[in-house]
Image (cartoon, rainbow, N blue to C red; front, side, top):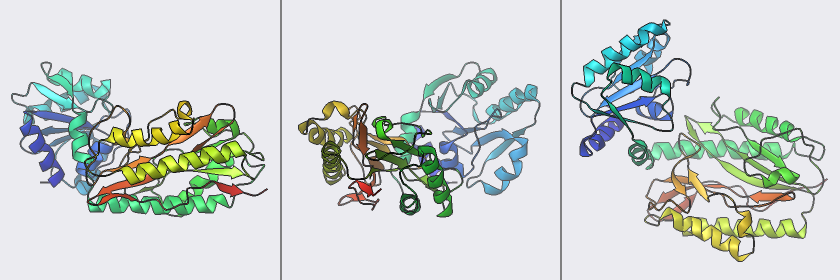
Length: 369
């Protein structure tokens, strides 16, 4: 039996959880090695506290399940006729849930489609959120997982440095984003990127989650670029800020402040330290510089198979950091109508502190006109 399944079932037994249902997405991939696109066809992995899991899946995916699963599974395929789906789910449930009265699900992933099929198969089942259980399982990365994240970082950094040569006044945000995506693929990223790159210029750079538009890059702009690569399903998530020509004194000051906040947080992070203490460190630096109201998001978030996962480096998340945690440190200052700076690095907690996995310079990248 797959050790990840074993570990999960041990946690289930310790918490008296009889049954879990995992749908298409990172958790199913993590446990089985099987990647399913989220679509109108459901994929449901049923995991009992004891015994072999069962997978309900489209018939057209049967060869994938047979040849690529890294864990023994009981397979329950269904055809294209929707009226038969419920019967297949009923058959699968009968094999593993004789007396189960509760079923755990990932609240942010499961849809009404899957919940309705399960409910109709066993109407007396009570659904509950099992998010924390999976967070505990996935937060501590193995050496192999960390190695994949490092490779994703290397790909992303090479792609950025190549794209930097392309950035000039007169280009649009969308043109630069497209070039960056092309370079990510050229340097070896998986086909499915962790997210669409952010390329935000001028006033748009004051929006932390801006979407690239047709705005033309101009002299004096700040250009916030947030991007990542994927390697063997593990991701990187990096942000650097570019100045088009010599930055103004104000932009130079906020860049210096953000860099200092980033540095202090990376130096502070270590095993045993609550995540909100790392967040507090960045805020102290930015508050002392007088820009506290312009730092509008958390300091960071976990990375792995997903671009946002536990642990969360935020004021309301007090869980202590543990060896093997991988996450971002990404303070920012955003001046409405003017511009913003964000510096984002990828971190892993080790026995001796925090190792910064990203290597790009943290000063403003200045593109001369």
